[in-house]
Length: 77
Image (cartoon, rainbow, N blue to C red):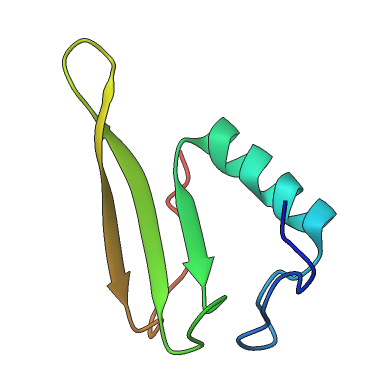
């Protein structure tokens, strides 16, 4: 799946373990969105989510990234 080189580490938060990555993917599927806190660039927090058509088919992906200043976590109900 990853080839001989494995996953590249970009900083201390980058997931480089395949099992941890698959666990993260499972959580993203369950949540329906993904939040990245510096896994690629430590100066960026990003949220991504699919955009669906009226018939439920995925049409695109939306990603919003910003400096993590003031981040308090996802909203709670």
